[in-house]
Length: 180
Image (tube, rainbow, N blue to C red; front, side):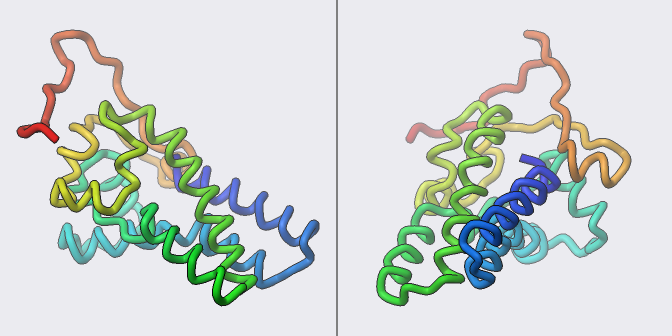
């Protein structure tokens, strides 16, 4: 899902949370889990892919055009959510409850929309253990990408990238080298 899509759905979830639950800690948690969970993309961009161009446009194009080499994405993992759920059972924290709600919304939307752009299992991808087994190699996890990001930043932010139509002669080969 595009960052703008996450922003809009998170804003809507925050509005519902504020109106229905009347709890600012839960609403703040929903915002953190629904949108700011994507900060792990920025972390991967700088730390694992060693990118130094910190302009938002460069960062967004890098991701949308599929040039990412490593997909560690610590915050996007079933394992982290299971640990946070157990921790919240002990703490009973309103902001952590909100984070879990927002984050689960984020992951559900990722599973639905990102599943359309990968030839491999998108459900397995959100397991940290699965990604680690493939050494976080983006091509092995998600296949090759030949997406094109719109030139305008806000269009790319809200629309995401477009995948050109493939003909049999331009189909990407299977990038997996081993069987798992």
